[in-house]
Length: 284
Figure 1 (cartoon, one colour):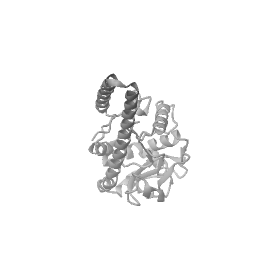
Figure 2 (cartoon, rainbow, N blue to C red):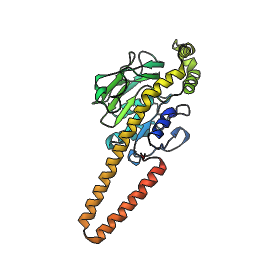
Figure 3 (tube, rainbow, N blue to C red):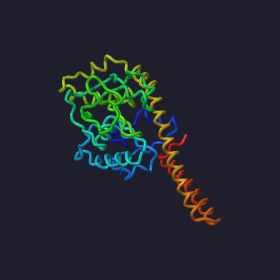
Figure 4 (spheres, rainbow, N blue to C red):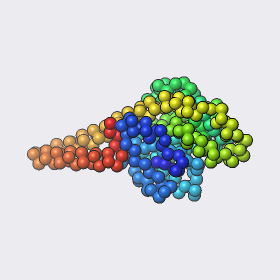
């Protein structure tokens, strides 16, 4: 789910493809409709954007996005929200998003894992203070009830969290390229200058190529672990559907029921192939 032409999935798309996932990219800012339900895909990823989580007038697809995230949470569909996507996930789950009281958090930085991250499937192997790219004005001021805090920064505490067992949110960026960061800096230079930030000086102190090499070393394996979660959840869902169909066939009884079950299995195989073609199935 992409909100802006200048904030695509970047290297995350390559990492997920390398881990065996097929991406079905929806761009509602270009008029592409969003799915009404999350269950038609094996996972949901919501990217960043310059709008706020409740800027429905500027981005009229946001209510549908929040509804899609809520549906993914209810259905247990593996979900990852990045920057604005993290804020939308928080809002969909009952958290609070507002303008950051400490001003924008911009540029290369670090976050620190919280104790709960050690047992998390995605964050457990992440180093204690991983490299990230910050680029946000708004922040998650209050986590959804029951959310697990996974990482913080010195400026804003809610940098990463998990809602339930299958939905993760990161306020920071890991999908960027050096070119993407430079483009954001050029586009936001005037607004950042009004905040007293010299973004050219900020980026001039950083070797963006080296930074992104460090980010890839940490966050590409993170993306691979997310792909493992997606595959496991998709396998469990398909197994549940198969068991339900088998139980129905057994109740019907006789060879006709067996034939019906066989035809149903073939239909499910066809549906699975169609889903993969749409990019919704997590196939290695």
